[in-house]
Image (tube, rainbow, N blue to C red):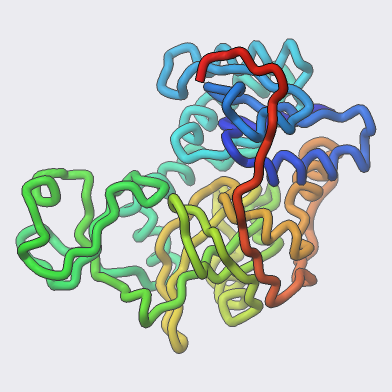
Length: 322
């Protein structure tokens, strides 16, 4: 049983979680990592093997990835970043044809998640409130600006008055003008949710975001609050959704706003895993052992605080390019 983590980067904890779970079932099972610069990827260094792939926007990315999967006898692929999801979902049949399974949501569902305007429509169709979107000719301050298809908090702006607006904001058609939800008033939560192959919700773990660095949670705490029941009620079934979904909400005194959905493992998932919600084990059971996941899991540890820090991965005798 060999598992591949794509765009591995610095996802050391995710690699180690899958290593721990696969070894319980198959002592010879490997977790392999792929990256455009594996020699500079910490996750690639701790994986059981690694290889270099072209940049995701390269025309031969899928073909190179597919050939490595065949050569290395990969059984299962776990994608990790937004920009690869649509390409992999559209090319899923190529991997199916050679017996390699992709844990990835449907093309249609990914499309709704990648376009934040479509995400808002999805939330609203599920009875979940979202921040109001303004036109660029009629808006209110303070204003929150973000791209329709962005990630990692790139091109996000809080605009408090007209002097802070410029031509880039006004002329860039990809930027959305939204109602500002003040983080002094609202608590921000990232909820790790697990959807089984039949698109039903099996687990919800809300993580309160205390501090963020480079778009990922740096300090967070699990909180078993009303978000669990809220998500179980409104998002019990999502057509096309499978595996780990990372969903963001703002909450204050009963008011809950849906922000975005990322159909992949998020950077803060290690907290969810360490709280007892074992998504890697469930993925292995569903996709490699062909077992069904039908039970609701709520026995994760509440009020578990995660404080992240930088660690070192040392590579001896390195002579490559930096």
